[in-house]
Amino acid sequence: MANILIIDDDQDFSRSFQRIIERIGHPCQVAQTIKDAFDRLQGMDCDLIFLDVNLPDGNGLAHIKQFQSFPSLPEVVILTGDGDSDGATLAIANGAWDYVGKPISLNNIMLILQRTIAYRASKEQNRGPRKVKRSAIIGESPAIMDCLEVMGKAADSKSNVIITGETGTGKELFARGIHENGSTPGKLVVIDCTNLSTHLAESTLFGHTKGSFTSAHEARDGLFKLANNGTVFLDEIGELSLELQKSLLRVLQEHKFRPIGSEKEVSSNFRVIAATNRDLRLMVEQGLFRNDLYYRLNGHQIEIPPLRSRKEDILLLAEYYAEKICRESSISPKTLTPEFLNALHAYQWPGNVREFVNTMAVAIDNCQDEPSLYSHHLPVDVRISIARNSFRHNPDKEQPTLLEPGRIHGAIPLPFSPGDDLPPLREVREIVVGHLENTYMRQLLGLCANDVPTACERSGLSRARLYELLKKHSIRLK
Image 1 (cartoon, rainbow, N blue to C red):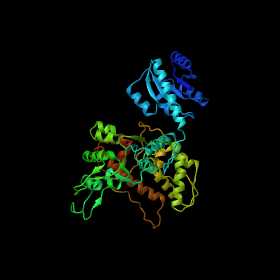
Image 2: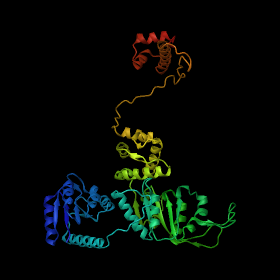
Image 3: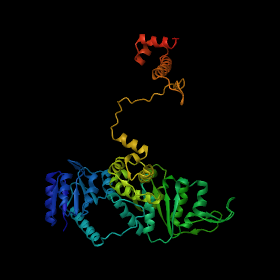
Image 4: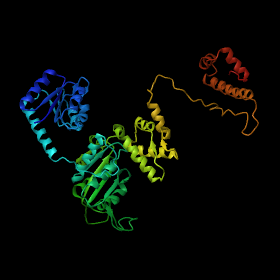
């Protein structure tokens, strides 16, 4: 028996559906809005949710993971009358059990119930998730916990892995986590595809014999040989040229290669983890990435969320790195003030965790002997970004311009030098204002081509005042 929740604002459909489920023998409740569903789930041990897409207070697809995060970890089946391929893709990508169109037959209902109940029973029997070594992966947000779960599964298998995510999200950390939690006795060999030049690639990857080319003074094993019984981590694989992709494909298929200058093939037993900040599927469609290589690599997939999408982890990250940086620098621990933490939450972190670590290091450097971290200890560019984002941009508002006096005709000199006796302020003011007026009037006439009406309009001066200043500074109209 399973506890079912239907989330659908079509009252006639949901009541009929509820009666069918109850006749089969399962308790069933109905919610007509997302808010109502959250309220019901607070006191409900739910096993399965049938979720409509278009609801009065939001799109059901956007809330799949929130529903799945309730203590009973319910399965979610999308049930909609407005189904399409994009919706199906989004639903499955977000962890939905299935994506089904209305109307739904009784046989289909029975099949879904049987399969989900059997799956949950099997999952419950094998519960007690395998503990994984996290290394420096910090966070308890649902998004990071999902990534750690996939990391654990990937570590237990021999399948290849693709790790995706923006720059700075920690793709190499997850690659190391997979390797360290796996059973392979060999080492993790990192290959940075961004620095792999075509003419040196074969020697770097496959090795060479002594004398095989001018600078080959001794034989050397390639990176794939060094990874025997271990893991090859192809970092930023989307940067590889098509020529290198072809060479790589054969190695991944055969696990054999020929070092430069050798007549014999060498074997190496390794598993592959690839990482990229690019969309490899799109690159395949554009002809920039080989589809056969993509499908060879595409086993387990881990998509690491950007830091701005998991801001609930910022406190843990700040505490971890503040302690680590202070310890490594042999300085006294720093207190994280609420004002400092609020600033960290307000920033969008375009550089993700990598930027976060560098920012913490700079903030601690700026703090020096002070015991507590405040927002003014943050780097200036971070503080500027936070300040800018706290106000809405108004494109219609005229922005102030910083004037550069004398930009064309040279800087306006001060009528005194450091260390000299200071003249009276009135005298200084008259000299500086005189220089400013002279420079301004000459530039004004140049811009207006000596046209007096235009000069008056642009400067805001009356015709009489304009002529007065021209006379004062001996400027003649040409």
